Amino acid sequence: MKELGSSYFEYRKHKTDFKTEVIAGVTTFLTMAYIMFLNPVILADGGFDFGGVFTATILSIAVACFIMGFYGKTWPIGLAPGMGLNAFVAYGVCLGMGHTPAEALGAVLVAGILFVIISLTPIRAWIINSIPKSLKLGIGAGIGLFLAIIGLEIMGVVADHPVTLVTLGNLKSPIVLLGALAFVVMCVLEKLEVKGNIIIGIIVFSAIAWIFGLAEFKGVVGSIPPMTHLFQFDLGAALSASMATVVFTLFFVDFFDTAGTLTSVANVSGKIDSKGRVKDIEKAMLADSVGTVAGALMGTSTVTSYVESGAGVKAGGRTGMTSIVIGLLFLACLFFAPLATSLPKEIDGAALIYVAVLFVRNIVDIEWDDIAEAAPAVLAMIAMPLTYS
Image 1: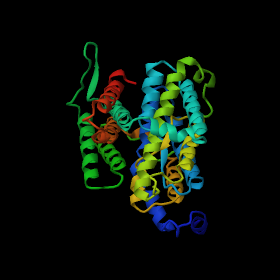
Image 2: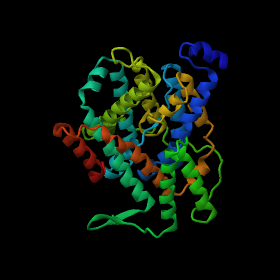
Image 3: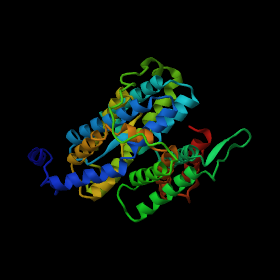
Image 4: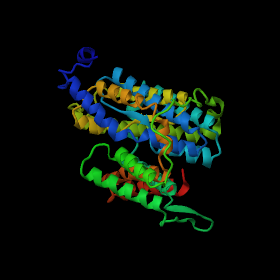
């Protein structure tokens, strides 16, 4: 594998080597490993089978990373079901609009196919440049606030109220307080530049909950859960007029999230040419879009490029071998389903709130002095959490 990688990925040309690529892959894996635990939790709330989503999540990550590695071979990118998009599918499409998981997966599939088609045409560049930067940032922040309110509800910090819609939950509950402490520790670990701060926080504080009897420990390894949603999509419903906005939303967010992630990674890895264009971006976007199609077929929400890939790039990752290492590491986690079901939802909620912070902090780049830029961004931000969509 080492020799194959050296010739196929051209390590010398990209000033890297096999060892560096492996270290980069491990680094990115640690920063995004939380998704294999959070994605099943979120989609299960929308009526999906927890075990089936757990398996689909890991397999879709592996397939998408392998495609990115072998086809987009100059991109050290990790891909997985996107946070925000999974929440939209579970809480917006399934719970809010009353669609079944099969209908939701059909919409994800159609959006993925649309992404594939556009990635193969010159329209791609036109779309990327047509949306104002501030609106893109506002949409990203809105997704973050949407995740935050879901995380607070999962934690038990807020609860339903018939008059005010939401109210404070039971803040005296030991497990709620433990979740709050987990969130604080995740933030502190990032400040200390500790890699894998989210997964460390989830595992450590879940262990504390198990030790003190605040949550049930069901084991670490077990059999691989069956893929209950494999090929279980309703394409007819997805192509109906009532699902048009859902398909557009899934495509829109995935497309611009991917473009933004690839651009940020390109800046770090030196993939911007003298004219400001990103080298080989068409290959990376096509690999990303095919990953979404594969994920929908397996039974999970939209697969997208992860901004956490920047951690691996900073560790020296420069080629698709980094992506392949990420995929292999996730495959090794297929047997951890009992561990995933043992994690207290309050700790999962803390991780979700932390991820929300990562989404929201980019609002610093909005042009606040220009009302034409600021107003649409703010409206996008506040509409998502308040409309729960």
